[in-house]
Length: 110
Length: 115
Image 1: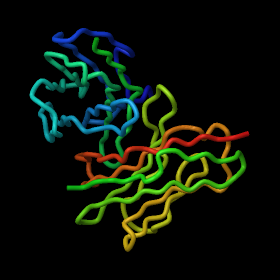
Image 2: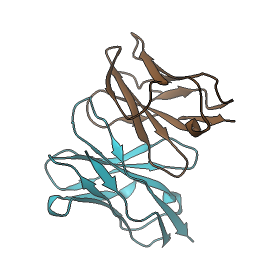
Image 3: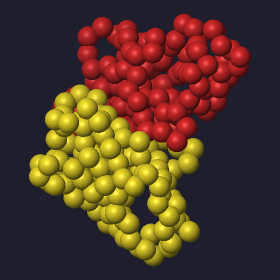
C-alpha cells in the first residue's frame, strides 16, 4: 500500500500565476481533505471532497478550488497566487476514523 | 467553534528522560482527539487517537495520551525519549467520527532531544 501520495514535491511560482496540486488517496479511502501549513504553524483546513463534491470548506477564498475524480484522487487549484500562499499543502484521505496524510507539496510564490 | 491550544512552543528533553506535551481543546460536544508527529520536511504521521471508551490511549512508538474531560486536555506522554523522537508534534480535534472529519490543529510543539 503506497499510502497517500502527492505531486509535485516542490513547486515555485510567481505572483498572479495559477497552480494545480495533485493527490492520490490511500487505497480504499473515499474522502480527501486539503490543508495549508504555513511555516511554523499548524495545518489549516481548506476543504474536503467526498463522492466528487465539496462537502466542507474552511475559511479560504474562492481562489482555492478543487476537484475529486471517480477514482477518488483529487486536485487543488489556486488562482492569482499571492506571496502569502507560500506554504506546505497537505492532502489527507480517510474512510472512517483518523485521516492519513501525504508528504505534502511545498509551494513557493515569488 | 472548536479550537486547540498547545501552550509549549518548544521543549528540550534529554535522551532517556520522560516527555509530556500539553494539549487543551475547546469544543462543545464530545471531541474526537488526535496526536500527529511531523519530522522536518515530512507530512504528518498519526501517533494515536481518542474516540471513546478508555481515557488512556496507547499509540505507536511508545506514546500514550490521557483524555481528561474535566480539564479539556489530551496530553501526550512518553516514559523514555529516543533521539529519533525529535520532531514537531500536533494535537488536533474533530467533531465527527466518520469520514467527514475536519481536523482543527494546535500550533504545534517542537521537541529537541539532547544526547
